[in-house]
Amino acid sequence: MKSLLILLASVTMLVSSFAAELHPNILFLLSDDHSYPFLSTYGSPNVKTPTLDQLAAEGMKFHRFFTGAPQCVPSRATLMTGRSPVAARMTRFSAPLPRDEITLPELLRDKGGYFTGVCGRSFHLDGATKIGQGAAKVFQEHQLKTFIDRVDSLNQCSDNEVAGQVAAFLDKKPADKPFFMWANFSDPHHVWNAPAEFRPDPASLKVPAHWPDLPGVREQLADYCGEVNRVDRTVAGVLDVLKKRGLIDNTLIVFCGDNGMAMPHGKGSLYDPGSNVPFLVRWPGVVKPGGDSRALISAEDLAPTLLAAAGLEAGSKMSGVSFLPLLKGEAHTPRKHLFVERGPHGSAPVQADMTNAGYDLGRAVRSDRFKFIYNCTPWIPYSPVDSAGGIAWKQMQEANAAGKLPSGMSATYFTTPRPVYELYDLEADPAELNNLSGKPELAATERELRAALAEKMILDWDYLPLPDLMEGNTGEGGGKKGKGKGKKK
Image (tube, rainbow, N blue to C red; front, side, top):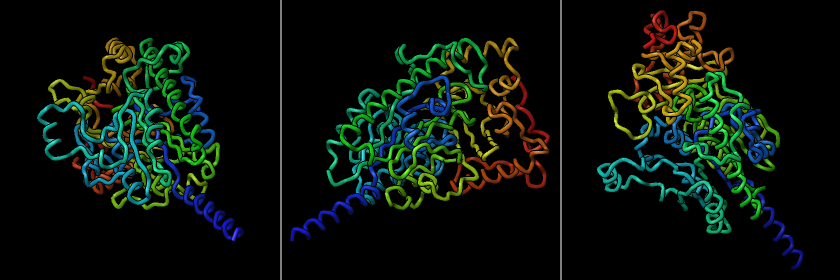
């Protein structure tokens, strides 16, 4: 009898161990407005992020993870639905996530038995918070705020309260259930107010090639880097909660940014700094330490991957593709293309003198080497999202007016109308300052990217007109009329 009890106990332990591997706890950490390569693990000399560096060293870091949009609301829609913001009908900030869009935490809860939660900064998927009484009444009458029903626990809080909220969530978790927690951080989003201990010396910073080296640029870059350094400390507090409860080694931890930094060429733009974000995965026993990947990964791929890690199938409408084999060190077919969309920003109404910081419609497709951008509202002048009033942009405007800005930057930031089509060789021009659209020697490449984008737009039921596919006649923007950045204003 005693031998039988020992055998049953051993079998129970094996079953529990197998279940833990099949249904790992999942912690999804999301920073806000966080561009690649602003972690020191990527070699950036501008920041010091020891917590996230260790997370990368103990797992895998990705250099080319791209969000579905360079903006908070649509990018989060993609992360949660495994679909593009266009397909999920989430290209407007005031839009609530449609009830028929089934999210990652819902599938984990309903199909995998997970206890699920969201905490921290606004998750942005129940409609804008400032929409006016009339719109708010519509939300209420039609029960459009749905996230309270999509997860078991929903709490918004400041960054310094996230660790406490994670602890409270774990206190409520049933002992027999794995958990999924989506913890959101405000940093490094505006307001940039990190204490002096986090802020580097502006003179010590390396200025990215897509900005001019101006005093105001250095000052705001220092402000931003201070925010990145602070979020590293905040993440450490959350990880400490797992360590104290003995959960750190049986939890799949993902860290990434929701979109790029709020500076020119970043947030709101279809250039790489707008949607290329840090992405780290730590999963002891599955992901080998020290992993380093340059595969193209779309935010559409995150939900299918986490579902696969939990032993579950992707949602029926998900267009993303699981990269779980890559995490496991198995054969993996990388993406040939990924896609990014740009729509309205914020909830302000259209104004006659507005810039594209508030309203813009565009699409982009990226391959390993090339980027094609399709601007559908090119007549609206460029202005950086959330930072047009900052000293960096003001000094860039002054330098341009004085004829002191490099030609590529002047053309990129101050041409009106902007070109309908842009093409960049990211190997030769990683700063994306030299538009090659219409160059005869790249016609085949441009045609391929236009076709890939058109296919994506068709399959996602995109509401924008398709780009010219350069079939036969090159068409406007495809050849003679599409060269350069356009005429200066």
